[in-house]
Image (cartoon, rainbow, N blue to C red; front, side):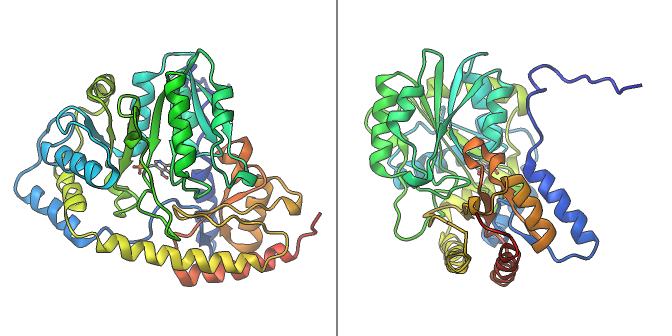
Length: 396
Ligand SMILES: Cc1ncc(COP(=O)(O)O)c(C=O)c1O
């Protein structure tokens, strides 16, 4: 007898993340003794800096083990508001304008639940970190893809954004630096987007989780710092990438109190409050020394340059030079395979675990995402393996 399915209608169109599928396949091959180059994982391979761990351990030892404020500990919301003012030129109220939760992913989920009505549209850059599509769908919303074109350096096109706005459009999502392309949105593109958002009266969710992982002198700009944007921007950021704290699960939304209130309703029902003692680690991350961030970014940059120069030597590979995050998004269309076929081939032939570009949306087809969050030596060996594997394929 066929197994009965209990899935609610809104869950049915949501696929499992294909990154997890790739990770499982990589684990299966590794268990058989195959050498696997892990380029699928979107997290730093570094340890959380010791002073951050110590702050959390101290809080735990001092008995910070009970429920705390729903929005987050006042020490942390104050540290976040202070950081946003100092580094981003964004002004938010530390008591009421910041909401801390279990990672940016969770925050995005709450934002969509709180601000999107069934049938309303959310503009998402395509390709884009796949969980955005799922979070919009789970809210009953309709994701609308805004193509990021390679020939435009994967920048959003403000005219195209405007053309895609309908009376049902609620939110535009901007991610800078971007995942999977690594693109840092230019100030001019952002300025034009702020004009579109104000003219067409929509909200903007600005995901800045990779803001500190930036190279070649590129400059990160926060959308909420542009004139007229404070009231319509939800800035989301967290600790997973810059401080190698992905397992800690801490992220936040910063916005006007009017926008935080509905998000708070969802958050209170979903998790009451973020874990208390780990928030003291996040306070230390923002208020303590920042040299570990600089060291990590310098190492990412070394790997990025090595991989870019290795790929420049691979016929058929076209790769943009990303200015942020820790991903390369090479175009492998010359080999005539779908990105799913290519990712499977690279896994089988070269032991390279990658993520097919199509997992990030229709406009990612023909690409694969390679994360450089493995050691320099492993990545260098992976590049040699990639070169050999691609050399065996016919090119169109
Ligand atoms: C653009 C983007 N936003 C958010 C996240 C998730 O962050 P967190 O670990 O805080 O949930 C990721 C993770 O890969 C990401 O790429």
